Length: 249
Image 1 (cartoon, one colour):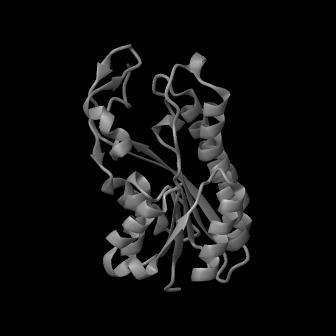
Image 2: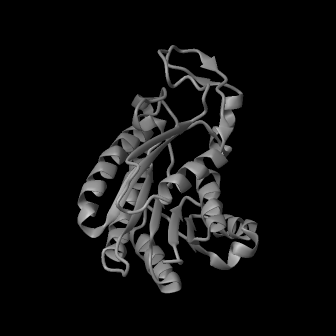
């Protein structure tokens, strides 16, 4: 089958932008989903001639109706779905004891519930299409393993994404749906610009942390996506080699 179709959430910037462009370059038809239409259109324009295979779909993954519309538009435009990259995510700044319920819910609804609802819609399409099946890749983050200071909502959702990945991998088998997780550490994006000025460390100090080119993440996602459906990368970690994650702090 020559035609491959993907949905990328959080595609307007950062990791989502890089992965969306890489998939378009790879020959995919790609639905770019995110909250800001102008950002999505800009990313699509960056694809050059591949722009014809890009579909910009403004989507708030906290809204179940918006998610259903995203998948319906993708199927209507492209006819099928082969890859979902659950990437949209936010954090909440502040001391654990000072965070509001609203801040907690916003992170949970975006990072976890949004990924679950997208997975549901992907299942509905993938299990009934011909050829059957597809692949789901979840953005887990290094925080799926180890927290940063003052990151309880984000870290909690990313640990939960690991559970969602395992459950999706198991429940998708009967439909030829594979699911894996990519855990990303210090990719150079607008979200990590603060690391050049120094970020809090577990021992109470503030330190500058190395970053890596976000294209390394896009290449890692492509590596996972290129697998045949009878093979799966269940978990992959791609990180800046000199970041302090592997060690004691």
